[in-house]
Amino acid sequence: MDFSLTDDQRMMQESLSRTLAEAAPLERVRKFAGDPADRAADVWAALTDFGLPGIVIPEAYGGLNLTLLDAALMSEALGRAVTPVSILGAVLAPLALRLAGSDEQQARWLPRLASGEVMAAVAMSEAVAGARDGAGVATAGGKLTGKALFVPDGLTADLLIVADTSGGLHLVEGTASGLAREIMTGIDQTRRMAELTFDQVAAEPLTGGQGVLARLRDAGWILLAADTLGACDVMIEKAVAYAKERRQFGRVIGSFQAVKHLCAEMAAELEPCRSLVWYAGYAFDAAPEESSLVAAHAKAHLSEVSRFIARTSTEVHGGMGITDLLGLHFWFKRVGLNRQLLGGPERVRALAAQMQGLTA
Image (cartoon, rainbow, N blue to C red; front, side, top):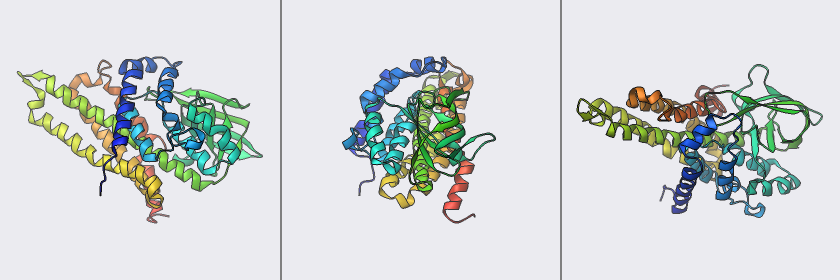
């Protein structure tokens, strides 16, 4: 039995990496990070040309009809490039419509999402990670009231999928009256986080409730774990490359046993994570009864491993590691935000314990 990726999957991931090398090189990321008004429209256009917005949308609506594993492989490539556009909305919003949207809602939105004409964002942080003081969205009479935090690409989204405090999902148009958006300042400058305020905002309900929210949560965990996996790959590659060229005492530092051990430890910690993330992506479609638990394991474990790799890679670089010149901090901060989005590892492990009946 073959447990590796297919040739098509490898080719698709490599093709996206080449696209990102042209559309979002480090200098483009640096420019985005330095300009709060930059919305990376050129990067989104390149990803649209690639077909990324339609990756999980059925062919009948103009999409590619691929699996979550394929989406996770794309997320891994985006993490490698610290791409200033999130894949979460492009995957989770179509999933929400497929699982809980009416025929009319699907026909109205899925073709436009697949073509890239419409950009979507999903606001479910409070429903998944727990509400912070003053945050959370309530619904009454078809209107939403409250505040949603840490919404990737929420500043520019034309369509919002919003989770309320009871786990219900709602569809909100970006032009809806009473909707206010504000940028949230955070550690990761490669992605724009939005704070959304709802003041009696009209919304269309999606069916399914907690069951659909759980599926979106699982998919989100997997995509974030895959993004972290890609970022960790690059941090290790950068550390090894630096160790091969930096010289001290007349020798490259990669010849020192201590530096060798640091690089080897990073590789040994990360490599088992690859199969964990890939299996989580596979299980989402092929083994849904296992999906929640393996998605939780992937998110929590990558959150811990990435912190070790970010710290160790920076140590291998020495004082150069913290400078803007190398840009290593972009990946460092990327995995830091991924760690907390949709729940930190402690929260995710607590949910995994509940899934297994280990806690109430």
